[in-house]
Length: 107
Length: 323
Image 1: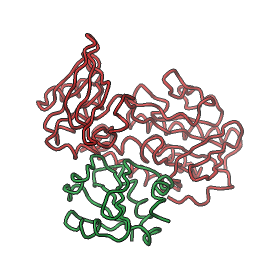
Image 2: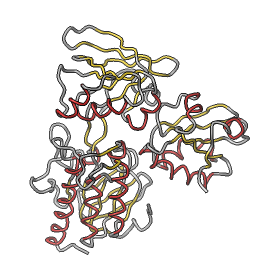
Image 3: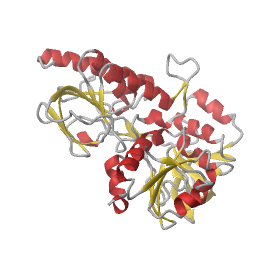
Image 4: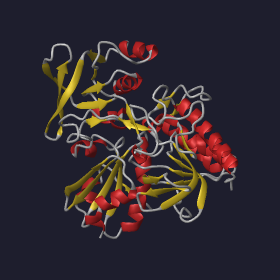
């Protein structure tokens, strides 16, 4: 399964009005470090999907949302809770470090 | 990507690092039936796959007449190593015990890996300015990866700090997006190769500030707004308004795992017994940017990776440890 793609158009429905916390992976094809992080995000989606909704947003195709939330470096992971950005993780990290950062949302 | 099977049994060869040096060592070691294990690294020493994953077109790697994308070149090398039986662990090494053989490595998740021979291919990572504002605005306009983040600066003004080939490459890449790129350099001439200088000087989107060093990154609303510069001749300070700041001020070799055990030079690069790749600890070999502050090319890293694998193979055979 892995992370589900989300678009600018679906952002409000999928992220802002979600009942669960939402993790969004901001990525692009041309970003080398994103290729390293995305498989880890996919694993987190599969392992923690019950407590955390996991989405990925292609910044090339959806520049509006990245701009709106000040994403100026990828990979960036944002967590939204109750429609508000709650956590920002910039740059590539290993799975253990990511899970530690996300502990509030995955338990 | 499997992390199974790394306990208990002692490996013939373990390679730390997954750039061109580590992966070339893996290809050679695998073809010598040493069943190498590559501990790829994730973040401590830079991204998995090394600095090439942060580049775009690589035009000087032989065999690719039309150039190849850096991340693609690394994926090809990895696939080639895998084809001959290399196994991979996608983790950072956090501790290396080289005091006794077999050597023991500990990974971030607590895995313990033992090996007879160790090939260190940990590379180097970008140097930071270490000035106020840099950490606070990292990812909010401050970056060390133009290919990752240039996209976010369309029609904006960005600054590149540095005067070498990578600074020129970053600056020219950024002109695809930015309205203006200002290169700030601490001297009045560049260290970059002539061809890169010629290309950069010919680019009319690039402006130059000479004899200046950044002393503070300033932000407003959580984003970079300007850079405070100090003139190295007059000592005068001035503010340069900008939306982004890209660092290209060289690299620091990733050697902290081996502080006190492996000999390093004044700049921290591992010392090997040239022309071999033997370090001062028998059975430990070093290759790639972690031991090379002179050439630092993908092809030279691959070349030393090959030497390290052959050195390790011969050392294992001489010690009667192979298999």
